[in-house]
Length: 162
Image (cartoon, helix red, strand yellow):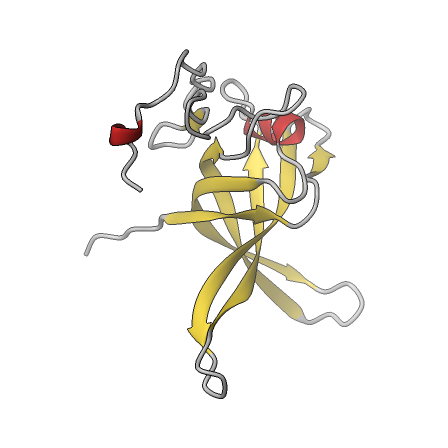
């Protein structure tokens, strides 16, 4: 039987990425992320956003792409971002209680910066400006592509599906 482990999200960072450097020189960006689920309030009949809080990790690959470094440079608290990744179940023993702990995290394989460009931050996606930069990995997750350079010019309104 075939398996599929793929996650696609659009949401916002709830704080700046936290960077960790390993003894071997590798780096990981720990990203706190939130997406909203729309639910209908049974009492008021109104639709409301219910946040889902997620933990993401983006790695620098040697050799290869530097997703952690890109996140550190371009993503900040509140930035709207598109994420593609896969689920990973982390397991460890709690040092204080000795109990087994588990947490589901999303490993980032691809991202797009959806915030307008401000003072050297991520590229813009607003109408009439450059499209979002994309950082896409190969299927193995060890691709050596760099982010696509933003193309000049914008998209005509008729090309935008919304």
